[in-house]
Length: 444
Ligand code: XLS
Ligand code: NI
Ligand code: NI
Image (cartoon, rainbow, N blue to C red; front, side, top):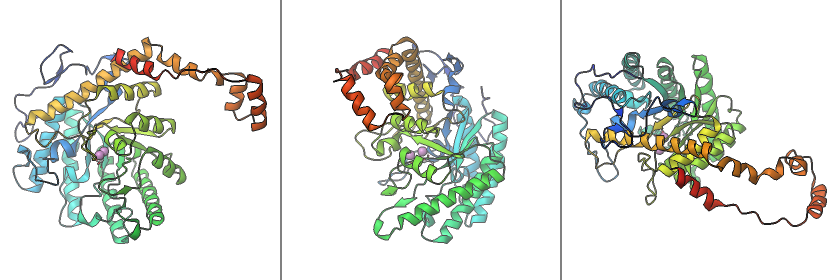
């Protein structure tokens, strides 16, 4: 368990103590009803199933600006108006929040931690100062860095992309920024390093040499990998797919596209995939589909847990509160043995109209409880229901004899034709989808 850290200029969340587990009957909004960090499920403490991380950018930097208006939230740590002072206050607030919530990890972009300077050198100095302070906070609290990343999409110089920018000078700037972000991640013991290519894609094919841009992306990732390994980064590099937004088309469209890209460029030893639920939705996939696809390819890295709004066509980054989704994803994670060195980063923001500081806690608690319920239900489903057996039996015809020979590639079309005649017309076997669905409802 982490230690609560409030040794800053002041306490930013007064009146809120370390959030504790009070059980399903509790009506205290500032308590866990299901997330009981040390409770063993399938032989493992709950906290190790999730490895939760707070996303620095949403929770401490995002005041709710949208295309129709400025931010609505008055975060006290942003009051000073001096960029470096704001960064220091924000760090105090962040560690107070993370330790009061009792989450073991956090994630950041370089520009969340430290403000952009007037020059690249100044930005690097700002980052170095903040990394130094973050290192102390981590040591004091026991909170760890799940992943670091570079923001290669906010600055206007990246308007045409970063690694895939048609202007080589911008590509070089992006490389310099990644170099510094990698150094920061290594210094802070980051377990992973993420690439989300916000502007690595296009708005119009008319002005875009897609083949060349994708080739540049591959070289860029390769060089980042080489430098990371050179400075002692032992963790995983992760690509975070998203089909669009802000681009019309992003090259890392979905898990399948990224699997193909990583294989084609021989990057699978060092790179895995960070999957975000709302990005899956935008690609017309379910979170479970993306997770299963990555797991089947041996490339599941980590998760950005959030959810989209079914009636809104953009990345609304809501806190995951859909228990059904949680059961489905935990069902997969339990079967594959978990997330390993990955974790679950709350890449989610409270709504623009949720303006109480307390809302930040409630949002995280709600998501943690949602996932805990998902874990408990999924585990019961696996242990107590015929689910696994039923699924296995559907494929029993491939476990022996001719079916097994086919699976191993040992039967050609002529042999299969002979077998078709010999075995005759198959009787109908129901897929029983509704029954599977009813099992989830029963154990939820
Ligand atoms: C944006 C992405 C971003 C990444 C990190 O849609 O989800 O937040 O997770 O750059
Ligand atoms: Ni994300
Ligand atoms: Ni996102």
